[in-house]
Every structure is written in C-alpha cells, then in structure tokens.
Length: 339
Length: 282
Image (cartoon, rainbow over all chains, first blue to last red):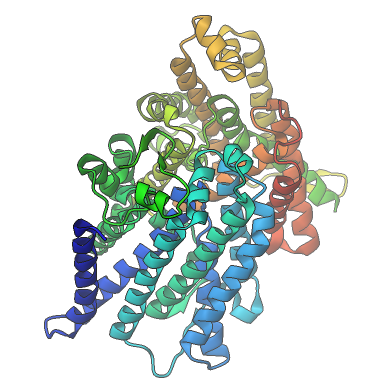
C-alpha cells in the first residue's frame, strides 16, 4: 500500500468514526440528527441510481418502485401483523430483489430511453394497483404503528451503517471483474459482449443490488416519516431526487452522491416553507451542471487535480497481480493509460 | 360497450395529437423529450391565462399560444439541447427531465395546485349516436386532432422546411452536405412539435381538469403513442392513438374506471417487450 493511499484510508476511517461518535456529544439535537439521517438516506438513493446509470448505462426512472414496495412492507408488517420494523424492512428489500429479477426479463430487452420510460410506467402501474388494493387501505394510505417507535438516533445509526455498506458494495462491485465488464458494457454494449462479458448477468446483478439497497433505504424513509400513501410512495420525486443528487455530484463517480445529497438536503430544508422553490433551484442547478460541468462537482475536481477519493480505476499494479486491464475507458470519451 | 368503443375512438384522436409532438422529436431530433407532458400542460395554462386576460375563447387563444410554444421549443433546442447532442443521448434526456421538474414547479408557484378547466360553450352538450351518448367536446377534440395531424403530414411531405426536416432525420451527414443547417432544422422541428403540444394542451384543457402535476400522465400517453406507432411515423400516431384510446376505454368498461389507466400501461409494457420499434417504424 502506497503512502498516499494509507493517508486516504486513515482519513476515510476518521470521518466514519466521527460520524458515529459526533451524535453522542451534547450539542446534537434531534433536528441535526434528522438532517444527518436524510443525507445518509438520499446519498444511498443516489449511489444506487448511480450504480445503474453511471456505471451500467441503465437510466432508471423507476427507483420509486423499490421505495414504495419496501415502505408498504414495513407498514403492513408493523401495523397489520404487529411485527418489528426490521422484519418488514428486510422482507421489503427481499421483495424488491425478486421484483427486479422478474422485471429484468422485460426491461433488459430495452435500451436507453425505452428502459427509462418502461421503469417509470412500471412504477405508475404499481401506484394504480396499490391505490385500488383493499389490503393496503387503497388510496387512504397506511400509518406505521410500532411499539416502541425507533427514535431519530436509532434511525440515524441504521441509515449511516446502510450508506457505508452501500459505499462498500459499490466500491467492491466496481473494482471486481464484474465492475470492469460493467463499464465496458456502458461504453459499448456490443464490443463488450463480443469480448465475453455476460451482459445480462452483470446488469441483473446491478439491478438486484440497486433494488435491495434502495428497498432498505425506502423502508427507513418511511419509518422516519410514519405513514405511507400510494401517490408519493410510488411518486417520481424519489427518482428526481436521485437524479439531481448524482448529476450535481458527478455521474459515474463514487463520492459524487455525498456532495449531491448534502446540497439536496440542505436546499430542501432551507426552502421547506416555500414548497416547490427548492425543486426549481435544484432543476436549474442540475441543468447548469450538465451544461457547464459535465462530470459534476466531484467529477470536475477529480479531473482537474487528478485525485480520486475512491478509485475504481485499474492500475498497472492490479494488472501485474492478476487484474485484466490497464486502460481506463472514462465514460468512453478520453482514453488514457493509467500510471 | 358501444359507448366505450365510440368514446375510445374519439379519445384516440386526442391521444394522437398529444403524442405526435413526442414522436416527431424522437424520430427527427433523436431526443427523449421527458418534458413533453409538461409542455402540453404549460400550453393549457397559457391558454387559461390568455383567455382570462382577453376574454378570448380558449380555442382562439391558440393564435397566441401556438407561436409562444414554437418560440419556447426553438429556444430550448438551440440554447441547450443542440449543445448537448454530441455528448450522447443521456445528457439531453436528463436536461429535459430537469426542465420538466422546473416547469411543473413554476406552474405550481404561479397558478397554485388547484384544478383548472378551459371553459367552452359546448362543455355540457351531448349528442346521441345510436344508443350511446357522446360529449360534443370529445368529437371536437378528435376532429381537430386528426386534422392537425393530417395537415402536419402534408406540411412534412410538400413544403421545403418539411422536406429539410425529413432529410435531416433520414441522414444527418448527407443533409449537411446538401447545405442544410442541421441545428436550425432541429430547432424548427422542436418548434413544430411544440405547436402540436399547444393544440393538444388546449384540447386537453377543455376536456379534462388539469393541474400542475398532470404532465407526467400525458408524457406516458405520448410515450405509449410513440411505442405503439413507431417513432417519427405520423401515420403511426393516428393508429396508435386509436389503439391506446380503445384499450383504455374498453379496459375501463370491463374492469372499472380505476383500472382504465392501468390497461393503457399494460398495453405499453407488452408492446415494449414484443415489438419495441412500433407498428409503423421507418
């Protein structure tokens, strides 16, 4: 391990420990905890959208499928069956995985915009089904009844662990052979298939991971919120949030979603009394970023200073020790050999 | 049953005019215009504001709304989308997505979330056709929608601009060599698509209640039209509108009105899985 990467690991560990320890200080209030919780959850949401759009080229507009499914699972498990929240949470995430497998057979036949809209239509269809399904109280929504109800500190710690887990999963998937195949696939579907990348399996893996983690994330969102309705539960705003977070932070970068999530949560908190304005501002920022900073805030900084907090790039050392490639196809645009 | 079939056919004409703009943009500019639904709703709000200010009939307000929408489309295409086109399909798609969120929330700020309606003297009138009672508005929608689409077809086939647009869509490089300003043509195509959304917006506004968030519903309808009809095919949009309208109304008749939309979505998903290039793709 080189000196700079040692420093990097130490810094990352210090930040992680600080995030766990700070809430114990007397200065933290329920409100700061709530903001921390939201940043962690939105960051996870962004990471999972990024895993699909930024690394595999599957622009999903249907992340709310998993949010709604998991949210309803928690509500049904807790309120209808009187079970603890984690049961509903994991069952919801499990159903999300099953759903992603089932949907993959339909969705993976489509590329680009067809995939995007098909995921959206699926979520709209689910919205209608849940609105007319008596078991989940139709359009009336459900209240999540838990005894004892987990407090904001507990939820913060669960969400923090979730977001760190999500980072680790994304990091390891992208640094594995599958990750290399995924990036090759994003840049050129046909060429990577010809080189022996099993596209279906690689895409399915990402879709399943995305479904599972987004499901956990959705469950936590709704435990925090206390009630769920089909309209917002399967609403496009979840994906809007994920898209804005990733674009502003930097599509195809691992750390971009952190920056994006912080900006997103702060903007929507500060402007919460002016409903709608935060979305206009975020929309303008997102379009400006796409036009002016095509790699997002983090992506642009990384390119300018040649520094990456978490790299998924293959290096020569990896190659010598059994990695497979020393070439980085950065978003298919600039092709450069790593040092 | 007869009622559902007649209504389905008439609504199909409305759906075709909602979808034709998206189909043009898909086929010619190769852009996924995720803001198309918002543009339709925006046109309805423009018409509302103009008829409130001047007392014009909403239909006549199109004289103003059409050019405004043309200009907006031309500007968006030239100022934003054209710059992003070389970067692939993803960036323009996400920009239009951002645009749809902005438009939706701006409308919300200006007009509030209350449902609105474009009042029309024929609002409540019906006529009997066999044993079915048909609202006159549906008939007007269908006739205007079909006429505009047919006029568009003639425009594309027989005018210089129309031919240039088709040339660009068939072979961009060859069109450039022949001296066509491709970016300008993209702008014009977007403008034309926006004029069709203006017509669609006014028709939708006088038929249904609309509010700032209804755009996504019309986007999905448009996408259904594109998927069934095949992108860029003007004839296809008419047939697709008919299929989609009938599917929804018959679905609603057989399984209850709550599942009316669901029937439409399922048709789209089946179509996407079986024949994603559409029935009339070029």
